[in-house]
Image (cartoon, rainbow, N blue to C red; front, side, top):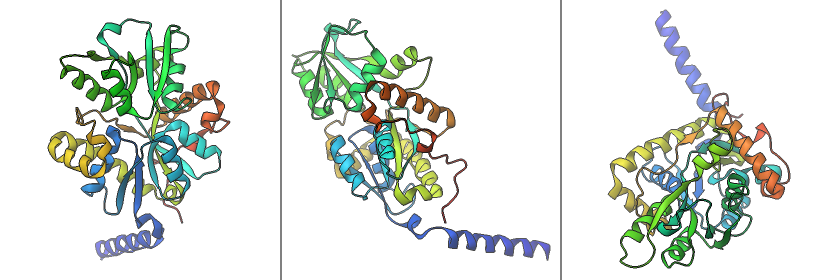
Length: 321
C-alpha cells in the first residue's frame, strides 16, 4: 500500500509539473547565429532533434542584422557577443546570458610577418567599433604601435584579402581561421598563412589567467522563464559537437542546407567550436571582460555595466509561472 501511495504521488506531482509549465516553453524556439563553428552545432542540434522538437536555426550575416532580428522579437536564443547582450540588457530588453563560449579566436598572419609586435595591416571582420576590434585593443593595449587596421564585411572577405596579399593579418574565428591557412597551402603563389596568435592566450597573459569571454548564448523574452528547456538546449549543443566530430560528411550536408555561408568556410569544421560554460566563475570573468570593453567604449555595452542580472543561473533557476 505504501509503495502504491508513493507511485500515485509521483504521478500526481508529474502532472502538476506539466500543468504548471508555461505553454510558451513548448513553442517553437528560434536560435540565430553567425557563420561560425558554434552555429553549426546549433544547426545540427535542430536538424537532428538533439534537444527535442521545435528548435529552428537562422543564420545572421552581420551584427546589424542580428540586432534587427532580435529587436523584432523573433528570436529566443542567439550566438552573439557578450557586449551586444549587455547592450540589449541596458536598453531594457529582457535578455540573459545562459552560457559563454570558450571559442578560439586567432590572429592569422603571413609567414613573412610572424614577428612580434605585429606590423603591417590587420583586418577586422565587420565595421569600426564592433567587438572584434574592441577586444583586440583591450588585449593588446599599446603593444602594436606600428600596426595599421582595416575592416571588412565579414570573415570570408578578410580571408580573401589575406590570400590576395592585401593585408598581412586578420582576426578570425573558426572555421575561417583554419580555412585561411588551408587555402594558402593549396596555392602555388600568394602568401602562406599561419595561426599566429591565440587571443585567448593573449587575454589570459594580460589579465591574470582570466578566460576570454567574448561570445555568448543569450536568451530573450519569455524564453528566460524556460530554464528546463534552456538546460536541454545546452545539453543538446554538447551532443551536437560529439555528433559533428563523428559524422563530418553528414555535418557538411547540414551546413549546406542551413548555413550556406559557412559551407564556403568548410575547411576544418570538426572539433573547433567552443564549449558552453555556465558556471559562476565564467560569468564573473565575463563581467570583467565587459568592464574592459566599457572602459574603451561605454556605448558598446549600452552605456553602463550590466551587473549580475545579465546572467541566467541555470543551477538555481526554476520554471516560470
